[in-house]
Length: 490
Image (tube, rainbow, N blue to C red):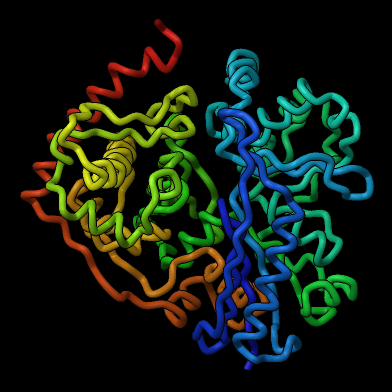
């Protein structure tokens, strides 16, 4: 038997999945790492933590599976996009990586909108926002000139880790699309946008396909990780497209709904849909895209509530389930780090409103879950406004989707059937992609058919959908009233 190793780097942890060529998951292992918040609105991660997590995860799957390292036929990595790592000539990390939830680059975003707005819309198919690499790097250039002066190489999260394994210096075109320095029309780095940073294009990695084999495990990396020297490593790609692929969304009209650190609703299409409120990326399948909406703090909101006020998720779900729809008037907006769809406003803040003395911890837990569901409804309505063809169901992905209470809540709020697949995480998608790259699977569709299956369906309750419509009306009214305050208009 041959095995395929996929490793993902998420918002708070890395997960490795060891997949057998017969379609069975043989072992998984997860290692957490911290995100630093040195100032309000800042979010940073230490790239060396990703490397340490990689080593721990590889050791974990090898121990759990009992296989020999030389039975692993290929390795693929994925990570959240936008996360640039600045390096010196010898690939040493100069400073922590600014994570995509960071909002410090507001001034740089405004500068880009005013001076390069048309170029960005034409070449990137988006509008400038704090999530993108370009404004993050511009912030470093303007605020940390001593660090910028040392910068000779720029990589992205999964590419930095892969460089430690193989010594390569490449990225894939989907990752490049998330940098705001890539021209999707020419499929090359944009000289105009790189010039904003006075950045030599040669400081950026070569662009390849996600399935390209870009190197092999070096002897040094073999000693560090326990893998076999010479094991092929493909470029890999971003976490969201790997989740889309893992979930089985490989044909036009198929849709995914993600309840993870961030929330996403993505539809597979045969063309991009440029719009302020949509994020357009290429699929790993030629000719397909997966434009999507985004909620910045989805499961991150529930995690924040858990970490701040205590209890575990199971107990919080139990408390939330004891409260009726609408949390007896309590409303929550999940804007812990600003919001994307449909506001594209980093100034927005999370809030609880209509608080009464009768409200308990159970009400607040319910309000957080409902607030995220309302944000996902905002996303769904943004998709509907573009009239993008899609099926009448979506595969639910992400850790939040494991909660039956939250699944039903979102299904009811959006009046959408949610399909739960046996496997949907991005490390599983990366393992399948490795199999496609080396020919173990004939195609992405064949890989999904062989390795995955439906395990449940959640159907919307029409009566509950009406109740959530009333909650949404209130949710929108509060957002509209508070936005001027968050923008400093007081």
